[in-house]
Image (cartoon, rainbow, N blue to C red; front, side):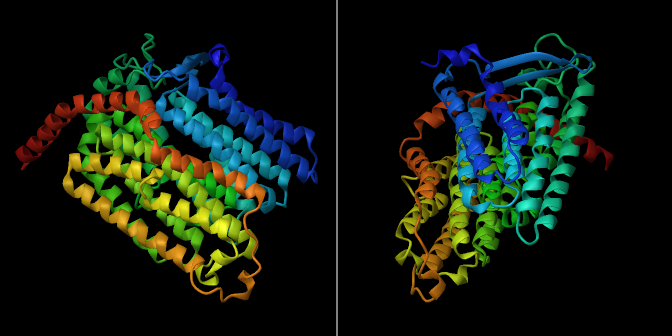
Length: 528
């Protein structure tokens, strides 16, 4: 049925359909044609999602690690190739991106009424940038897409954001740009080291290449001291994007000031680019440095879990509460990733998807109530379940998903992470469990204050319930939350091979990391 997928450059098609749509909006629509622009842009996002769906059905779970490969000569003098490919991890993130893109476009129909043409152009460009990050198999190409993504998000926040939009947009751009520059230095360090011929990254005999395949060869060829510094360079770039404590301070401002669709994309996809970077680059390419810095990484993840939850508990603004909850949830993801074992990595990657679904849905729901009341302050509400019962029901389901109630997606990911953390060190699991309890506390506190109690505020008595369009873009997320919660096997199955591959590389390099730490300690002792 989907044989055609193997006959065409499917990844390039999925990646560039939004770009073609953006160009069409620029050249074929005039300012003032808001209705036509929003329908056309949404149709482009729907088409892109439908084209990406066959990837799920044609991806061979027991086949090659990277599939749907596309490779063309590009900048030959630098060893740069146009190279696309996805493994099971990237596949899930590509599908998450195309799905949330459709929902973000639908949510914008009533929220965006100013400069609609430019808005939808930037949204489509952002979609291409994010997809390219997950598909790129070349360091240089990866970096290009990573940087391209910054520009449309900067304008989305800076033009269509809230009262402090310029401050939030500039802060987002500068933080991410600093991290990107350091990441570029790490890429260049690998590139120039590779010029010696010791690092055949692409497995094609090219002594100087930007390819990120053949991780076994890369990990065994890079000396431990170089791994340490390259890991730090990558760490800053990825940690800012996650965001890990203490690099998180741009996130609440960006979330609060961004339009609803921007917050959905920011939480659902952009934050995953940071965690994806750790999984794709830091662990398999720099395993010795990963072991050396493991105590620091786990400490930052645990601090993020507890700190994010405590600060979220103190928020009076619903959107800011959800934003700080992302700091806590992404700390949980990082705890699973740096457990460096199968259960932890599986749980961490699945929780990346779960967070995109549940937190994306929370931002959509907050956007729904904000459009009706133009306030996100929790104190302004109370008892609105009486006038918005469907909205209250959907909000409750997503709240339970976020706090990890069994039968919903959050529980599966959190359980796997706790198993992986416990296998590494029991107190990691204890700290993670405390974070889950705190998460339940602030989410249930917010829900109780907003939906229960007396309906005292007269402005809330005339609120209308969810309309058909809002139900259409919320129901897919509810269905997916139940699907992953009740039957997660297909998702774990697609992660089996890439996770096993990463764990094998990391574990095989542990003795080298231990010996290097011993040598460093011995030299320090000798110096004393």
